[in-house]
Length: 137
Image (cartoon, rainbow, N blue to C red; front, side, top):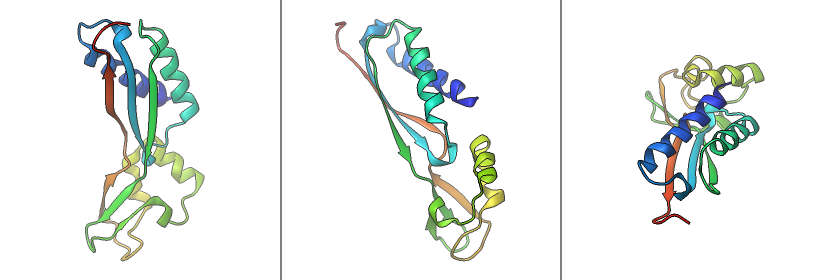
């Protein structure tokens, strides 16, 4: 269950952003979750809620923005998304979920068929912003 590990990383990032300031100053966290990460949102949201609740944070607003996968072919420079990659079975999506880099074993450029492509967007989880209040409530 890597959702718990990801939620813990988010909490640790928030703690680091606070530094020596009162934890109740934390107001909001904005995240971007890549399509290739395929996080189980219910598990992640629950884990994040539990882990934030274990700290002395006040009411923290968490916003999660999905980040669609964008792939770029090294041979023909075609950009595409997973929606253009037909035939991804549930097992393939599961493999990509656990190891996003596995996408290279399953996909080819829909324009030229090349296996030479890179993931431009939509991989991993990223903390976009953390809002901290100037003073304690």
